[in-house]
Image (cartoon, rainbow, N blue to C red):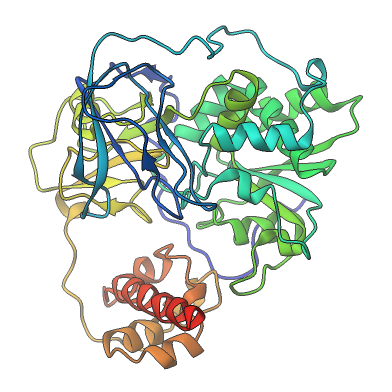
Length: 454
């Protein structure tokens, strides 16, 4: 049988899955937790607490700031120290809530038992009720841009969902958080998938996993056969070739069901698919079945020079420095610390940046890995064009951005760039292609937005 993959571009960087077989540990509580109000795409959340308030684990501390937004809940118990600004993964200071941790007192509404709750035992869970609980739980995409999950389950009127695809690809080098989650919580993930299918009113589901995770493929196939064998839902585990960036939702839709998502503003549901990360499926289970808002997540802390790389279940708001210290501390070398993996992660200006809803990894690149090579003139080899999974011309988009030719950049579809870094990875001249394209894309999107407002 031919193993599936997407049809345009792609690369195959070295894996370096150093923590593949390292069981997940629960990270200790921080002494102070920091909660940025922008942990998702859309409007920042609005604080509903003030200095001096006592909060518990699961207390609402910020409500959604608009339709495209998500509430934030405290992951710790303690006293609100202040509402101020803090440096986030972008390097800018953003509004945040600071909480000094005292004890570990939970809201009584949260079910902390390990009993597996099944959809069939909860007839009160209508599609509308599932969506509402996901919305109230502050669940957002756990593997990408942090899009509020409930919105994906309410597609535009002219779009009709036909299936839910679970993104269990984890194609970024180094990161193993999703793999450990699958190996340790497969039952909950499948209940989460069933909830997502019921909410989306579809009966077809897929779980896309790359073939470098044979144990996860075997386990989930076995579990699917047990759970869905006499069900109205049809769920298929789809083994995929190792190919980056297969975790991009447009690439995953292409690989799994063979449909190409058009250029923006088109989204996967326009071709019948709703894509959710495997971590999101688990968070949906907890929010809907356990009344547990999104307050913690699986995170990989890794790097070749790190003495004890590991996977952690981390309370949101925990400073990254604390996790680095748990892994033996910062290596003695030139280091670059990334929120995420080496391909799409953001280099940090401070290790006090907190773990947020979308933080799947803290990666430390040391020595030669951390240093950029001196860029040389473009040699017109077109490797960046061959590697681009969106069929773009990265060399041209980077040049147009550098020269601020925004109209031409828009005409050449710069907004379709998914910022995967494949172009820069393959460039033999070490050109800063992605850096320039990111700048151009954000500028062009701002121009388009201002045009729409007028």
